[in-house]
Image (tube, helix red, strand yellow):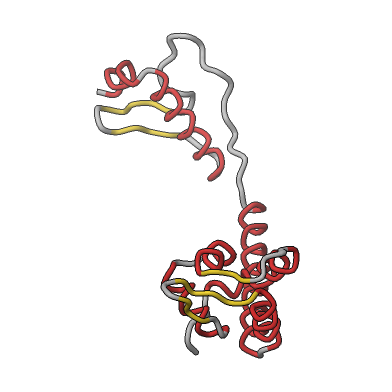
Length: 163
């Protein structure tokens, strides 16, 4: 199935704006603003909706445009695209809620005493080898987070500590 125009999602708001407007005609620039489209797309839309060219300007009657957009809203393609977008939004919301529920609160140790070196449960076995004691995945992540936090406070001092 070919891709649907991006401006489909703007039809309802464009109709509301057109109904509130007192303008008799809409030009290409107006169509660009209504739908957030490029000048080229606006010209194509003008042709699709029955607009015409007056000199170098493309125009369409406001009422004609309203009728054309109302007609689009009744098309099966528009209904299908609206349902598809709604399903996508709902699916993304489910994924977002699922990800939020999977967030892990890392146990972070209390602030280390001034001048402390590595977090408790960690020791430098030899240059290039760090030993970390942990009881769970969350505990490991918490200890590594603490290590990164300490390194971020004074990277130079941390560098000399581990070398």
